[in-house]
Image (cartoon, rainbow, N blue to C red):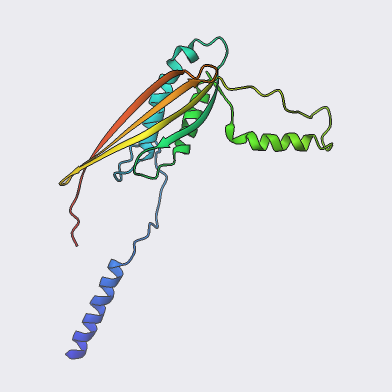
Length: 199
């Protein structure tokens, strides 16, 4: 009887340890990236998509772009992250650039490629590249506008209720005059309820 009881205790302990161990996601499937993602109370791709689409739609309607005699050349710089979360703001600005480019109403200067371009000029000037195909400095186009901005958040939590508020502000600044030609903001607030997790 004692042996049976001891065996039962060992078996129950093993089962408890197995059930309390780390869980792994072993089966997956592709999901629709346009579907709303509210798995947790953090910044999500849904927030980014909604914000970027709204801001780009506002920007391309502004006369500086919509009524421009020639296609404006823009440069995307920095989006300040003033939230308490680690948010990849470069990804946000990349999406802004892609959406604006796909509108067909603006062109972009690639600030990040300048070092690569300079290195290529030096290589082409080394004598290894034919004169017919060699390019060089002095013909690059300057940007007309710089696009930058700021992302803020406010988190409020009372009892089991929690709200997370995001506000993004984007500016398009005229490089010649340093005047902010266009600015707009988009706000998002998400509400959550804390769920009690039992054993």
